[in-house]
Amino acid sequence: MTADLDAYWMPYTANRQFKKAPRLLTKASGMHFWNDEGRQILDGVAGLWCVNAGHARPRIVQAIAEQAAEMDYAPPFQMGHPKAFELARRVADLAPGDMNKVFFTNSGSEAVETALKMALAYHRVRGEGQRTRLIGRERGYHGVNFGGMSVGGIVGNRKMFGTMLSGVDHIRHTHDLGANAFSVGQPAHGAELADDLERLCALHDPSTIAAVIVEPVAGSTGVLIPPQGYLQRLREICDRHGILLIFDEVITGFGRTGNPFAAQTFGVTPDLMSCAKGLTNGAVPMGAVIARQHVYDAFMQGPEQAIEFAHGYTYSAHPLACAAGLATLDTYEEEGLLTRAGELQSYFAESLHSLKDAPHVIDVRNIGLVGGIELTPRPGAPTARAFDVFLDCYAAGVMVRTTGDTVALSPPLIISREQIDQIVSTLRNAISRVA
Ligand code: PMP
Image (tube, rainbow, N blue to C red; front, side, top):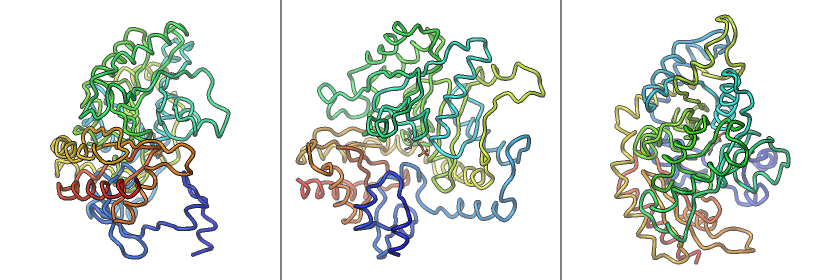
């Protein structure tokens, strides 16, 4: 075991600290994990915002096993297999409006890179190759690859690497503790922050801008809910200037906000949407880009034998992922999970906002079944207060997630009201102890 701990260079983890007191998970089922000591842990984050139907659902497990035995792999270039087409259709059916073309990747990061490349190529095939500029947002998280990192707005992720894509600019984030603290659902103030995009259009000349990418709800930087009217305003500005709007729905896709996609919850249809995580219930890595009809059509103009979009992965539409995806969508649909977050939203909100008076809590925010509790920063301390809350909750048998000073919750959509209560009371105790 010691040798194993030594060899594994863990991702996004304080390796040296972790290896002194490892947290090892060995089993998962439904709403729970079990650790290597056999202790049960209630999952308050759906693994990593992905296990929306709960863990190890027999139907999904069986679909993966059967697919592995039937056809383990099929090349995705100039070849296809039926489940890839079926899953694409099923995903397109869930997406809003004419978002009905689906391109498969293996992760959220790859979905983001694919969407950015699609946007650049879209303008080229239409004879607008001068549109090369990409616009992201401060505090955006779009995965770890160069495109996503460049349009992302996490300073810590950027400063470690130096090199970024050129021709990228950012609009401001929407987090405003002054005007919007303790908002239930969408905050009232801040729609005008979308006008930053208009300012960048004035600065750069809008005909040089290919796309703007935002998470409808920014998850990894602390659960930031879009102000009322903000996404509508971004859409209007994009339309005015021929800029593609990309929603990164890697976290919000597949039911998190009470609809299949947050685009539906907020009533704004982007041109491209990246998704992953809940697509396969986290069981097999898979991501996708969902494109509107006009984007696809633009690529389909050249000679019929030409490859229209020179992009793809060895494991695009992997048979195991497609089988998992189909069984996942069956599960979501049969159990009504894609709308369950909407049904539980007010119970979840009320429960979460009861933490308002706990020590050091400076904000509580929520939408659907995702929430954030922000604690006062502890300047100069080696770990944020939120991280200590995470450790305390884990010791008490509840898994939450921490991002900076915020504790984030995004439980599986099968959660019961009692389990919501358990998470919140564990959090309350943890916050008091850490204080
Ligand atoms: N985009 C968003 C909005 C995300 O939240 C994440 C992951 N949390 C990613 C992209 C990257 O996904 P992955 O880790 O699957 O590459």
